[in-house]
Amino acid sequence: MQQVKLLNVFVIILLTMLVASCGIIPLPISIVHTGIDVILHEKTGKTSGEHILSDITQKDCKFVRVLDTQKICMTDKEYEEYLLSLNCDTYTWDVIGRVSCDKNKK
Image: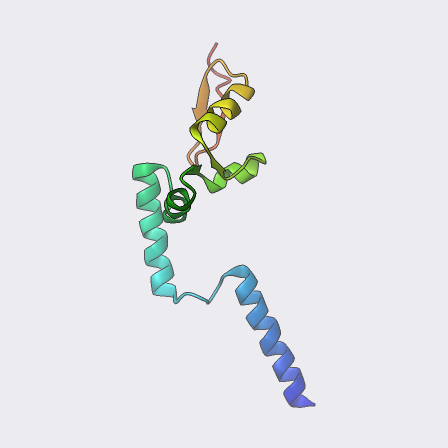
């Protein structure tokens, strides 16, 4: 009976780690990957995952678009249509790459 409880606890911890993506990748590798992504995003506006997905799909992919209920990957035409649908006089992008209308411009 004690083994069953211990096994249940182990399974719950393992599933939590899998769902939360914690503990799967060793901490030093995770820290290095995050550092590389920060530098890459600063220089290119995309993370390594976005670059890989863009290469695979042959479209421009940005995970942040999910926050605006848009497709992650868009063709240039689709992105242009999305920008025009915002009906902005002036566009602005925040630090994570979300686009919005610039309320300070007239």
